Image (cartoon, chains in turn green, orange):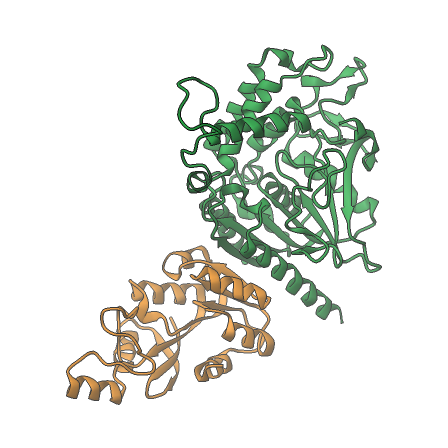
Length: 377
Length: 179
């Protein structure tokens, strides 16, 4: 990640009070944009990334040279058409693609923050990204959208800034991280911390890297992003480049080899401490708790038009949890649409080529955008 | 557009707030949205239909009227429309109660099992009637609770439900009801 200094960064000079009580200021927020902001500045969309995403949602990520994580959805002529809309995407604070995070230098010690970086929340992430609106002089976004942790940011954004987006699309998410979600995240964190090279979070000083722990965390998490049926169809009990079992602990099965590969490539692009911080932010997310247990109150002041999407085979953030958000909005008469998309691809469906999903977003955005323009005429 | 959709749409007051329960592909909703009121939502059980509605720019929630009406607050709509699905619910009485709870008024259409052709069919053939509006055989019909227009009127009287207006066609009854 040597070119990380070259990514676009907004330096936020205003102090930001974090939920943990600390205040940060003069910190970098790395971002990328796609398409052009029109003269009326009414075509801007803020896309929020999930746990291991970054600001490079579309095109080619210049750091990893891989496709942007939401390349199926965002781009010229795609569902979120960058010939029509101006898409902004930022790396969350706590992340490792140029935004303020645990690998930044702590001015007090002149060393990497490591685990001395303040614990951040979804609320903090959203408040930091709000500065992008001021930077681009956008009075009101046309849409905010995101899947998984990105969806949580969508919910928090509308709650914090009720009149700053015409539409909102939370996808495959939840308003409150469940015990199962927390348990799975804890498994990942413990795996990192159990790696001797983690060194209590100060591995960068020691020129070490807890790659094994981070890879295992990724392997475990990766399973939760897929469905049982999807795994069975893709891998079944197929063997990896061998005719029979080897009676050992090498990767006999293709699924083992696949997971090992996923783990090994992940450590090249992701920082272990960032993984700890971001999973913690997800675990702390409980929007209803911020409103005395009444989720509807989070959206009382907003006129934003919501469209919520879930997937049939997503067991990580299942339809029932997405539907809770629909119910909370309905119970106070808010404008909300909802659909559960049929897909065998599990939680990851929102990142993949699922035509019904892509078409639904495209239709929702385009019809909403033309309605807004009718109103203005 | 179906003939009855025109009649239903004309029963809706201008600029009122409407929920179309079982809105299908959004044909009726779209007409009402363009001509009568923009404040209209739909509830639809079929994913495919929900996606068709989204493509028409309509606000629709995927859901089951028998389970998902309860999330809407009392009297949150001026009109709740139920076009031609009442007889297919497991518990139509509960659905009617929910329609009247959520809507100040409900517009309900029912296929008339007392239509003369239906009566003649049953009388002379002795088999379950099949007509344009009732196209299925007894073993694959989605219609679990068929009633006649007279049955529906009797029901409303018994339950103290006010019938504000009736549009009776031989094969179909369209009622505006309220509590």
